[in-house]
Length: 301
Length: 150
Image (cartoon, rainbow over all chains, first blue to last red; front, side, top):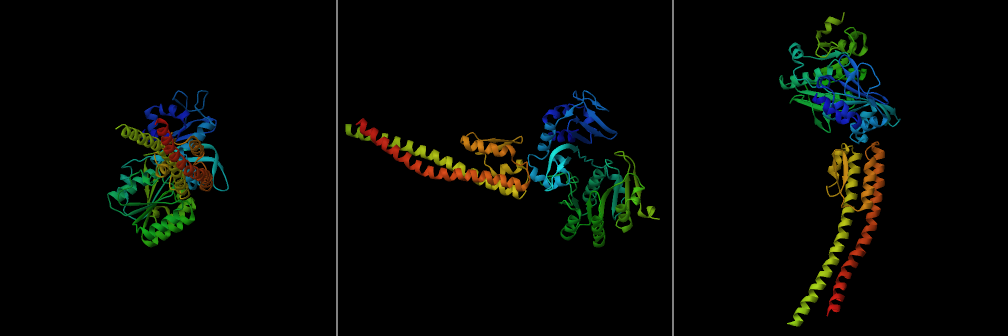
């Protein structure tokens, strides 16, 4: 609930009051606030999307009473998200997001100019970060060392699990971990202050390019483990192999919709086959749901 | 005794008029000082934008003293002590500042810096002349007043 209210500073004044008056139960389980020009304000919760009404109630489908986000609301929200400082978020905007206070992140849609400037904003997606301490206890008990891949569908809590796992390894097991945080989502970095607890033995490197970050961390921080979110490109895979050869273990996450995707998607398939991964944790679509633990040898025939 | 009182009165009148002249000239000097402070603050702001030092709410307090402006709840409040034209220029700049990319923001800052520097240059010339004038006029007024009183 506090995280939801903490994210409301970035919503235009015209919409903020209605969202603030939502019931505490709803506030506690909201994952995203979605604002689209001349469309009803939508909230993403575990079971799907809900639309906010002007009387702070929710409905499953847009109706006449729906709270509409007008262009002025979107523009004001964008201004607030950027802290009236678009120049400070140019690199993030080129990738379509802005790192916000309290570890939250806003996805931005609009017109992207050749220079990489986002203008004529048409929709915003304020993603509320979750920090659940102790969520990685089960994973930590199963982990025996080596590389780890956390895989699951979008919104299944991969980053939340990764964050707590880093904290557990760093704090309890005293591992030296370098976190390559390309979107500030793991550390919740805002103006150089880390808002999420990643343990006292963790070094955090904020960089837009993960491969560069991995190289820097390997050269300068001498980590036992390197953690980063969402492995997605072949270049990142090469960096992982480089890490493996240097003796540093990798902790990363990957988007999959089901277990079969681990081998059908080239990046995860190559990652598993590279030998850099010794444990795979597959998350169920439901947050806090069952985690399936797999060894690479269970998958590779 | 009478002459002593007259002399004392003359000195008093001259001293009062002269100090009034000095006070007036120091007020003008103060305005010039404030303008030069605004210029250096804008230079510092421009550099911090160029180096992407952080959001406006972070860099404004680092560049501007409370004497010029402060930022509260994301809103820039310009000190009312600042002369009207400068205040208008500053509020015009801050109404759109920060909403472009680094290149356009530094260019925008440059435009306002040159406008303020032009005003500062003119002010410096004017201040020099006016300070001298006020001090001399203050002394002379005191002198004439005392002669008239005698």
